[in-house]
Length: 270
Image (cartoon, rainbow, N blue to C red; front, side, top):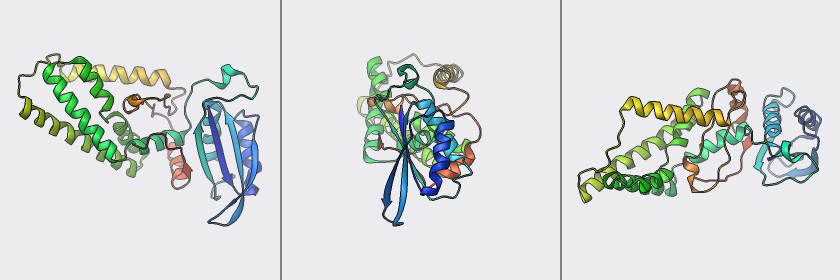
């Protein structure tokens, strides 16, 4: 469930309200605001609805010719509950997230912060130690800390959508994570020594097949109509519990609209 807010000039309100209605949203709230900076009066359109309808509304809004070039901003917020008389079954349907949530989530998870570096170093050290000792529990725990999956998705999404900035940010984050993994392995080997007791290594082809099967299963479980999707994330495992389905069309035009305009909530700064 999401709340979508659009702050825009009053003359654009009718067009945006019509888009919300076409997306199946019955309740549309409109409020007058004054925006400092441009020092102009604006109106805020707010809808609180199910995730599929929020996604359809945002897609229509970003692709609308009626508001193209207008001075507007969009915010997307995930809601815990909505009580408004709508059918609970339809309201809570977990479907594709709005596109700005997907792309900005990948941006947030690819920032090189102090906590990111600390997590990469701690996870790499724990994994190296666990492999030498053949400790399956520690290997699983290390996988919860190592930041790789979201960064690979940022790189892939940037390449596919021709967003060079996102591609380079994901590539830089992957390089940092890989460097820490190699350094941690060398450090643990120097301090602890061998031999390596973990022996369940697979061939590269078998490892690729297993990874592909997991990725396909995860993508199919959340994808709908080949749209970008993100599952519900909670807890410390968000670094690996994040499987957007990044196949589809019509993204490039929305990427152009996103730059400098769409603001998503900061749930996980790292």
